[in-house]
Image 1 (cartoon, one colour):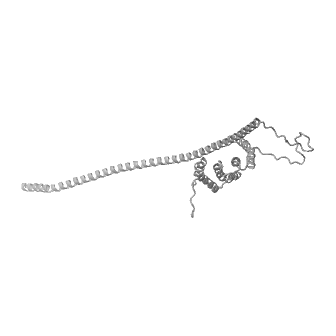
Image 2 (cartoon, helix red, strand yellow; image 1 turned 135 degrees about the horizontal axis):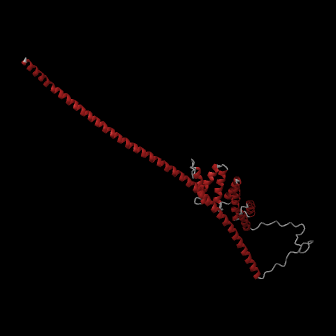
Image 3 (cartoon, one colour; image 1 turned 135 degrees about the vertical axis):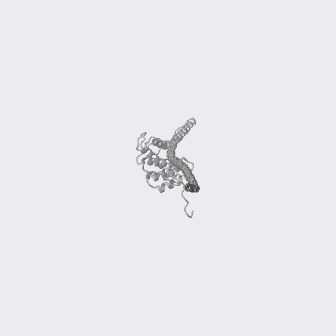
Length: 302
C-alpha cells in the first residue's frame, strides 16, 4: 500500500510538473496580447488627440477667414458708398462752382457794360469841353419852321413822316438787360436782350444776349426754347465766351426732355472742344453718373 501511495503521489507530481510550462506559455501570450491592446489604445488615443487638434486648428482658420471675408465685404461696401457719396458731392460741387462762375460772369458783363457807358460819357464830355474851349457855336443856318407851321412850335410840317424811334446805345441797352436779369425780372430782361440782338446783331454783346435768352427759358423749364437759343449761340456766335456754358446747358436741356442720345453727344462734344473748363468737368461728372463712356467708340471705317 505504501508503495502504491508513493507511486500515486509521484505520478501526480509528474503530471503537475508537466502542465506548468503550458500555463506559463498561456500567461505570456495573454500578457503580450494585453500589451498590444494597450499599445493600440494608446495609438488610438494619440490619433484622436491629434485629430482634435487639427480640427480645432482648421475650425479656427475657417473662423478667421470668415471674419476676414466679412471685414473685406464691409470695407468694399464702405468704399463703394464713399465713392458714390464723393461722386455726388463732386457733382454738386461742380454745379455750385459752375453756378458761382456763371454769376460772376453775369456780374462782369454788367460791369463791362457800365464801364463802356462811362467811357463813352467821358469821351462825350471831353468832346464838348474841346468844342467850348475852341469857341465853337451852334450853326447859324438853322432850319426855319415850315410854311404854315407856327414859329417855335416844334411840330413837324404837315405831310412829313415822323422820325422812327431810335434804340438806346448797345452798352446802355445791354446793361439795363443784365441788371433786370440779375434782379430776376426775366420778362423785361428777355425783351431787352432781344432788342440787343435785333438792333445790334454784329456786336459782341449779341452773343451774350442770345445766351441769356436761353438761360431765361432754362430757368422757366422751357427746355425746347432753351435748346433753340443755345443752338443760336453755338452757330451764330461760336467765339462767344458763353459758348462752353451754352453747350453744357443745351446737353442738360436735351437730357431733361428725354433726348438722351443728343444730350450725351453734346456733353461729349463739350469735353472735346473745351476740355479744361469747369463746364467740361461738370459734363464728365454728368456722364459718369449716367454710366456713359466719356468718348464714344470709333465706328468701323473711321
